[in-house]
Image 1 (tube, one colour):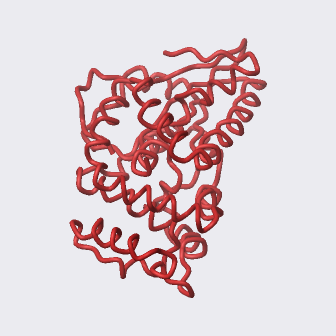
Image 2: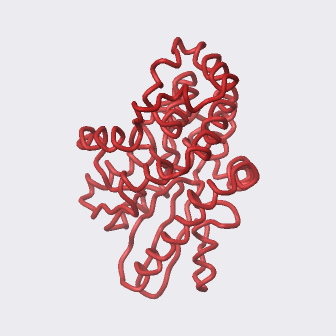
Length: 292
């Protein structure tokens, strides 16, 4: 579940993919409209193989029609690495209490076994808080699968938006995203780490299935693989990372609709599938989202 969330949901994406499928596949795009406004909703994957070919004429046209681009965070990650490093250092490290002191002997042995195929040892992670170790482990299957977070759909769309001179906005800051995990209790962080260790072995195969579903716009499969499992395995995490944020973002979109013009919203696709999606929150206010 941790690896799937890293790929599809976006929290902490700033601090750290997809297997290519035929170019005729088309990721899901929705639109909400009123008399003088159009808001496109696009679910991104945060790590994409560079030659995946996911940008279709429909997506390009929606971007060209939009004068504003809304992302999960508006930070130019390439220009803010120093600031990000300071945030991660503040929230992600606890040198006074090494990781090994927080884990049981069985968990320590499991971590060593998970890291061994990657030529890594637990010593590297000793100063880290459990949430940061979990996020870092979630990136390992991407490396093994040859996937590149730098080629993620959100980053690609940001570059397009800059080139088109769109206004770039963010629903959150990088610090807010990191604190979603950093503010969990130690027990919750360790549970998150347990999930991450379980996922590392399954990660590449899971990503292959997710990648095909994303590029084909198969929202039912995406919802089943990510949302259904997450609600069952980690309900508190699901509520904090998915539901609470979807409610907040839907509120911002309602405000956009109260104005006028065209905007493109690009957030992790986990937020646009399932029963608690952004579209479901909008529907509670009578706002209909139409698949394009």
